[in-house]
Image (cartoon, rainbow, N blue to C red; front, side, top):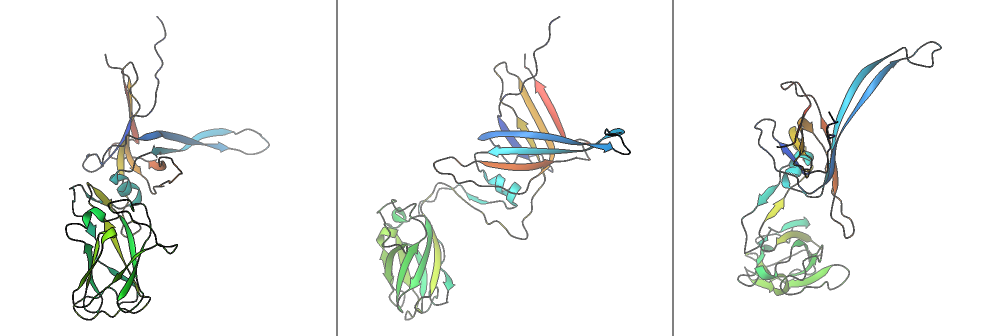
Length: 295
């Protein structure tokens, strides 16, 4: 009788976190640079007297740490490792959105009577020229505004835009009175005055955000004191071998805190996430292994 083929683990196929309450998956991680389950134990040694060697050795604690090297950022990663589930919109939007203007320094720009009533996309022509970004308005006179944009990443959308100078100025708007409108065509934006006479205080500022028409969008705010980091289970599968063999690890109780997000020059982002695996008293285990070679 000859020796049997050795059991081999090759590559990584997927990691699927799941709810410990319902068993339902959060989703699946497929774009992986690798993952591992490190089981490291401690030995407790009895030392004493003149002996250079232990008198006795007993097993101590074992740490089970999972390392996930991910190259994709599905929404559930933010929920599990940063404590907040994102808001996703998957219904296509053909109009784009412009957020409400919010005063940043001073109080005179966002004002429905003596300031700006709103900023919106120019009807019919505006959506095609809306450029993704965060914008700042600065009062230069009692009825004139400078418009600044934090990034030029989307300036080629629709009518090309360019910075006017190193202050990141992209345009100006002369605001009328009593509900008058003024268009900045290259940005796709229409500014509407308040119901009275415009009276900005010079150097006051306000901010707003723009999203062009989209197929989907995601947004999440991280860092609230009320954020919760849930426990979860995780199913890891090695890559299926050419002989059909599959290897599975089911970590029944996991918790992780922190999600590094890398931005490297001309490289895909990769995050290495540390997850602690620990004892599930209902199942009386930490993880389960399965290996199968189908017939």
